[in-house]
Amino acid sequence: MRAIGFLVCILSFCGCGLRQAEFGNWVVRLPEDSDYFYAVGGPNPDRTAANDNARAEMAKFISVTVDSEIERVTVEQDGEIETTVVDQLRLKAEETLENVSIVEVRKTGEGYYTLARMPSRPIEDILESLRFKKVPPTAGEIARSVLLPGWGQFQKDQSRKGFGILSGQALTIGSSALFYVLKSSAEEDMIYAKTPGVRKAYQQDSQTLKSLMISSLITAGTVYIYNLVDVTAVPKKVPINQE
Image 1 (spheres, rainbow, N blue to C red):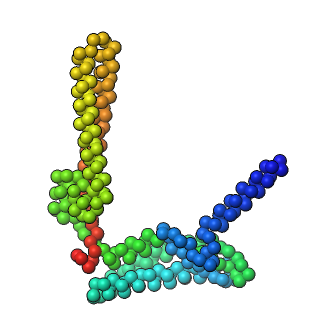
Image 2 (cartoon, one colour):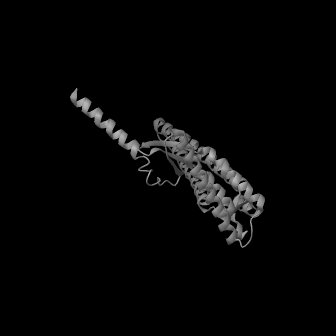
Image 3 (cartoon, helix red, strand yellow):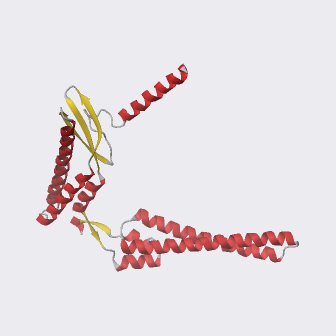
C-alpha cells in the first residue's frame, strides 16, 4: 500500500510538473509557439482585471503588428494603400480578438498574472493579404491540367501540389496497366491449365486482378477530376508588387 501511495504521489508530482512546464515561466518570458500569439496581463490584485489587461495587451500587439506591416508594404510599393483597404484590414484584425482565451493564471505577492493566447493563423492571413493578391486561374493553366494532370498547378507556382497530382496520376495509371497485364497472363494460364483445381486458381487470380485494375482506374479518374477542380477553383497567389 505504501508503494502504491508513493507511486501515486510521484505520478501526481510529475503530472503537475508537466502542466506547469507547458507554457514555461511565462511571467518572465512569453512562450515560443509558431501557432499562437501570447500576451501577459498583470500584476493586478483582481483576477478579472488581470484577464482584461492580458486581452488589452494582445489587442495592442495585434494593432502594432498590422500597422507595421501596412507601413512596410506601403514603402515597398512606393505608394499608398487605399484607406478603405486599411480600414477593412484593421477591422478584421479587431475581429480576430474574439479568439483570445486565458490559458493560465498565476498568483504572486504582487497580484494575479494571466496568460492570454490567440491563434496566429488569422493574423497571418491578414498580413498575407497585404503582400499577395489572389488571382483566378487562366485558361492556359486550366488547359495544361486538362492535357497533363498537375501541369496547371506547376504553372500556378504550386509545385508541391502539382507534383503530388502528377505522381498520383502516374501511379494509378501505371498500376492499372500492370494489373491488366497480369490479368491477361492469368487468363492465358487458365486456358492452358491441366487440372480443374489449377484452372480455378487462375480464374480467381484473374477476377482479383480485374477488381484491382478497376479500382486503380476509378482512383485515376478521381485524381484527374480533383486535378481539374483544383486548378479551376483554387486561385493563385501573386505578389502585389509583381502583379
